[in-house]
Length: 469
Image (tube, rainbow, N blue to C red):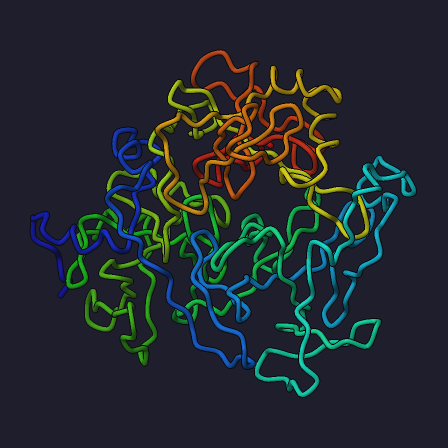
């Protein structure tokens, strides 16, 4: 007989650990969730895998568990990615990041031809200046998915699943992942043809039953099926009983556990009816939504009482930020309602170096936002300033000091310096062309809809970005 739940709200407290409200239609609930003040910092669990001596797994705020060296520095790979006019990145078992400074474009992104001189060559770093390879000792031996690849100079470099490993000089301390992200990568690890071939944190597999996966999103590490369809939970359910029955099941499909599956870790099994066994994660029975239009859609959480499920949530946003409704979804905004934008930049070189950090060349950003004029950039794309009394409480959202004339990092004692909010250690901006809350007139400004050199609105949900930028 089907186990239905009785009325009552006591069970909701147990579900706080598992879920985060992501209801696009529930404005009040989402507003309360924006700063996530009510959600504990639950970390994603992972499967133990063999590792060479000197390496370990490090928890991170945005990317979940990652591999790290003895100093805690995150390890990254550079997976090969198909661009418009060829491939960039590293094929399995091959190294392509070296100490030679690249001086000209590669022509990987049409319509720009190869051979154009790159900017700031007197200070341009080489690939290994930014991405030191993770070298192995002479007596190192492969273990598990860890192998060794030979560099051109004869040095041996560690690789994971045949992808050579690097650290990033943009990471300052253990748990930083400023060098790159798993976000915006497809199920096979590839990215978007309009975007640069960026670096990706390497890490152990999450501790999941067969048939599930985890995707990095703006809201956290989201649980999906192995086909990358979102997984949901219903607020009326508990670990022992379900309220989604009868008519509810026309659009919601329970995620079923095999007959021989057993409870383990954060995962349990609920027998909905004789022989029908449903997976439960952190006390929440799991479902898919039959009307999800495509993989990684989150529209199933728009229904009353339905939530997406996360193995780990992102840290709290700055308390002064708000969210604003647009015709295409919700965006992150300042206290005054101005849409917040992030800057994306990757140069069209063989080594695909990023150019979006204050320590990178500012030529691309200044050309895009102000025709090379810093004053025009500041007028059209002002930084999001932090009030004097504001403080940062996470790695994801920091307050940094910049020289507004150059866009470079400045000393906190510099009289010309300004305190600005930064996401992933990169400044965020508003747009002068946005006149009222909910305007996103600057979204997709720049090359290839802002993906290669430009500005993107900070959409609250990743699926709001689909087809917009």
